[in-house]
Amino acid sequence: MLVHIKDLIKEAEEGGYAIGAYNVHNLESILGVAQAAVRACSPAIIQVSEGAIKYMGLKPTMHIVTTVAKNVAGTVPIALHLDHGKTMQSVFECIRVGFSSVHIDASDLPLDENVRLTKAVIEVARAKGVWVQGEIGAIVGGHGSAGDFIEIPKADPKDVIEFVKATDVDTIAAAIGTAHGTYTNEDIDLGLLKAIKQKVKKPFVLHGGSGIEDKKIKQAIKEGVRIINIGTDIKTAFCRTLISMCAANPEETDPRKLMSPTIKAVEEVVYKKMELFGSAGRCKFAPVET
Ligand code: G3H
Ligand code: ZN
Image (tube, rainbow, N blue to C red; front, side):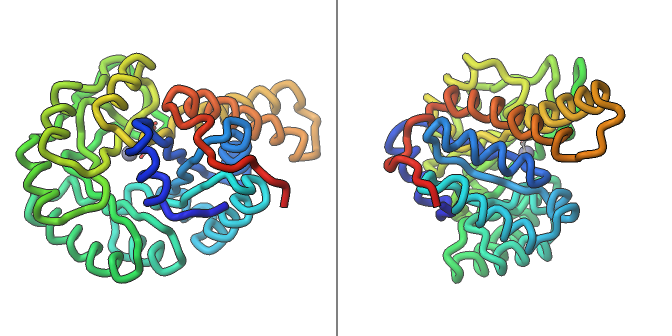
C-alpha cells in the first residue's frame, strides 16, 4: 500500500535500520521493487528522478506506483519520492499530484541560494503535509556510470548544520564521500557522518548507495543513516538481463518474454539491499492479496 514516507522513517529511526530508496524507470523496475518488498516483508521507498518522470509521465508514474503498491505490495508499505528535483516546477508538480516526499536539490548553488529555494519548497510542501529533503555538497557522478576514479568533493559539516537550522528540512542529504554510479575510490567518510549526526538530528539520506561495500553501509546505518539511495545497481541489473535476453533470443517477437526476467533481476538486487539495510522483516502485517 502507498504510505507517507514519514511513517516509514519514524519506524526506521526507532528500529535503528535504513530504508532503501530505489530508483525506478519503468513498469518492470517498479514491479521488481514491489515484489522484493513483499518477499522480504520490507518497507520501501520508490523514487523517480526528473528523467524518469519525463520518460514515464508524471501522472502515469503516480498512478502506476499507487496501483502496484496496492495490488502487488498489499499491506507492505511503499512511499513515493521525487529524487534530485532540480527545478521548482518539477518539485511543485510532484507535490500537487500526491508524492509524500520531494527532494529539492539546489546543492550546486551557493549556500544562501540553496537555503532560499529549499525554504520556498518547504513553505508549499508543509501546507500539504509533504516532506522535503534538502542537500548540501553536490553529489558527483552519474546514475549508471562506473569508473576508476573521480574527484569526490565532500560537504562542510558547518554548512550542513547551518542549512538544517535555516530550513528545518525533514531529511538531509550531504556529500560524505559517495558518488552516483560505481567508482573504485568512492567510500563513506564515517568521521564526517558522525560529525554531522552529532549536531543534526534529522534523518540522514545517503546518496550514491551503489558500489559501496556492505561493511561500510552497515557502519553508516549505525551512525544514523536512515535512507539509502540505490540507482545504478538497479539500472545495471535491468540492462544486463535485457541485453542477454535479446542476445540469446534474437528472433523473439514477444516483448514480455524478453522483459519478464528483468523484473526478477531487479527484485533480486533490491531484496539483497533490504536484507543489508535491516529493513527486511519489518512489515507489521503479512502481505495480503488484493
Ligand atoms: O539519487 C540517487 C542515488 O543517489 C543513486 O546512486 O546510482 O550510486 O546508486 P547510485
Ligand atoms: Zn542521488
